[in-house]
Length: 101
Image 1 (cartoon, rainbow, N blue to C red):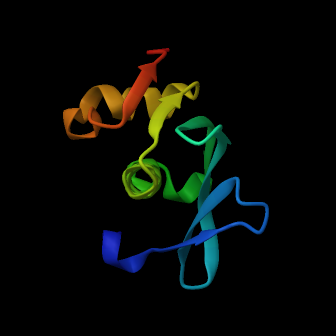
Image 2: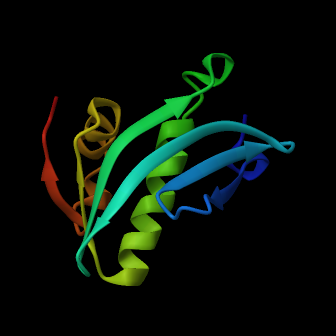
């Protein structure tokens, strides 16, 4: 699956971004905005048949984009996303804390 095959939607509650492929939600990332300058990523869920297809990375990129636009820093308590942060130093400009689990 290519990145261009996926679109992204923000949930009505404003605390989730969904990855959508052909009208099907194939994954999501849960986050909380803390104050005016932070975002905490708490969890990511990917449909089993889409595991190992970089969906977590694509969702993380959406959070990073949001953080940059809103001048926020990002921290993750989700082990999968924390690992993505470790593998992608290009996100360091917005990374606040990486629990490294």
